[in-house]
Each structure stands twice: as structure tokens, then as C-alpha cells.
Length: 186
Image (tube, rainbow, N blue to C red; front, side, top):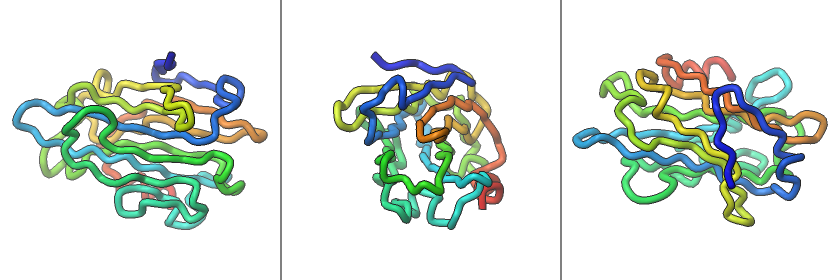
């Protein structure tokens, strides 16, 4: 059974899920009638200085694979139509470069300001972490309930401490835009 995390909640994945190697980060949502809202999942793979070692460690719809090959975005879904995950990012934890100590997971609304979109217009928005080998949901975080007026949500972060992977649900909503994150981590 999946753990439903709340803001600030954390989990030592290496201890709780010792066999976990390959993960899927799945993002799903439905929109209110008449609104076509485009959510985008992105990850920033950060070094010990909390910066991207090189720009290509920012994995998103225009850069689908990390330079070390450990993280791959499966592509952009612009509508949220259909069942299940609408956007997915795959990660092979043992292959992640030793220089990467944190993977920040961000969900943004494309062209939010221009279209006046925000998380409050979504229904059933979630992000989850799945064990690829067993297809078992490990944890889930619902996005729409507490992020009504925000256009970006820092969902959480995977961070490596002494060889163990931990997950923390950040739950930080902003209205600053994706570029503000890029500026912060480049």
C-alpha cells in the first residue's frame, strides 16, 4: 500500500524499500470543463552546491534525458486526457552520477500567467512514485487540494545521504514561473 505524504513528510527509501532501483515519477490530472490545462513535470539534478553540474541535468519536455542516462522524461502530455499518469519521468537510482546528491521534482503549469491557470482549476491532480520492477505505488502526493492559486509546485526531492536515498515532500507552491527555478539552479 502506498504511503500518502503530507507537506514536510519524509521517507528513507533505501530502508523502507531496499529493493527499489528503478522508479517512475507519474503525474496525473483532470481539468474542469472548458479549461485545457497543461501540467509539466521536470526534475533538477543537483550537485553538493545545489546547482546543476551542467544544464542538461535539467530534465523536462525539451531535454528528455540526463547526460548520465539515469533519468528520462517520457514526453509532454498537454491535456491530461485519459486514465492514469499523464506525464512520467523514469529514474534508475544506481545509475545516477555520484556527483548528483539531490533530485528536485517540480510540477508547473505551462503558460499559466498568460492563460490565467492555476492548480485550483484542476481536479484529481497527483504525483506519485512507483517501483518500476513491481509496478507498485510507493508514495503519492495530491496536488490540487492545498495549492489552489499557485502555478508551480515543488513536489519533493530525492536526496542521497551516505549512499541512501531519502524522499521529502516539499509541498512548496509559487507563482514565480519555471524560469525562476532555472535561474536558481543554473
